[in-house]
Image 1: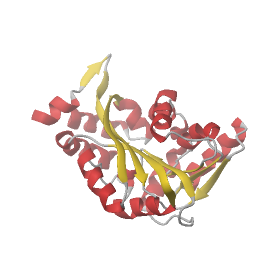
Image 2: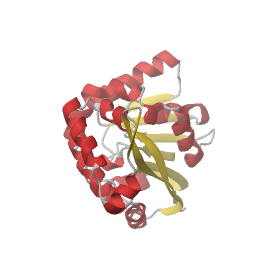
Image 3: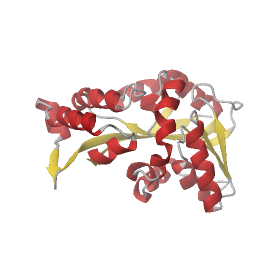
Image 4: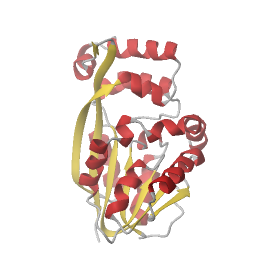
Length: 252
């Protein structure tokens, strides 16, 4: 998995410094509200990409470490760190399923818009549980369509970005968290009005393929169509897209 992710994201790393979903203040406030950072926290943001979530956390914690498997993503994060004069953020190259940290190290763990790339969800959650201190929280945000829409979006996702593995429903997430030992404190599903064109541009999808994939979404049937409710506005495709927002607790 790491090599697939690196090969896909290295060439488009700069796009994620300005992606509406990844960098907007509204979406970053969402993760802050979920994570509830505290001034003394040592925080870990995994699959940090270009560091958007880590930068959001930095003013509210003692120190934040952003970890990612793609060096080019971290290069963008380091550039932004210098440009913004941020003094309490560090960047580490590493894999979410084999974290280079000791047990019970972090006061807060976050991950956003990444687990659908992970080939072993149980290993990823086991590592999250291991490095988090007892009686502390972890915050998880990831794409999480309802089952019918997921089957349509899955075709689009893997053709847009072959490093995509699978988006989990909220119910499936709950089963994985239970196996890992976490207690779910918050488990919610949030729907967004999704800008299809920007989604394609983030991964530099060829326009011809983007047109084909738009047809997949607009050609959805039955329950999937009702869930996705695609429509054209001024020629641009918009459709529903969902994320789970989960805060999980490691009991002491």
